[in-house]
Length: 250
Image (cartoon, rainbow, N blue to C red; front, top):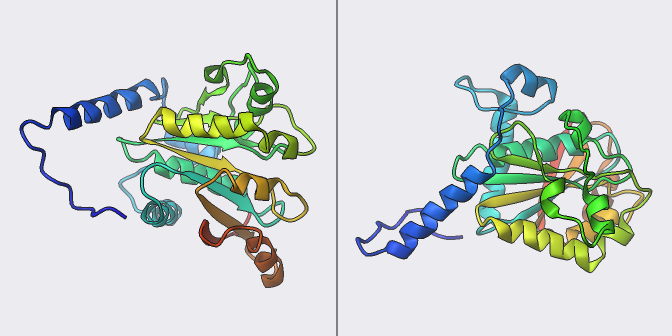
């Protein structure tokens, strides 16, 4: 990890200045048009910054800090539940929101739970031009048509699109890998959070892990047994595995 102490800019560091200005311009281009109110954010179960300390916000800030300490630069985080009902989508959504708290950064939430996609419905976003599956099925599709404003500053959503029984044939394609690489590289100040399907009962989460830099496993508090959690964790490369987050289920 790089030294957190910033170097002082020299008077002739014009290239660095240009890079910083370009970064701020890139953030400005993806800022949302109409920000949601605190009441609307609560209704969508999305965290937001406030002057009053709140445990749930601090928890996601802490998770963000730990992930930033693991990987340099912008990176792709896969969030997957052990089993259905653990609240994996809740964690993915709010981790992405926490990433976007930093006004010099942005985040993109990518819904890859193709059997039961939920992010667009939870955030009440209409998707007239479809989502991930529609883009992957159409070689002529324009990526910009499936990236949606969430109403959360600096946070965009790539919804799953029409539900599919399995994502294996989508996630293992060259077009999917190219998409993830493009989403990561288009803005060097953007973090990509993938909302993945449950690990138990499907190979989709393991396939998605190959596209990610770091994996967060969400276990249902009082729902998943230690043996089941260990079985799920064993599916991932230890070098990428960030750990297990216990959630009451949302």
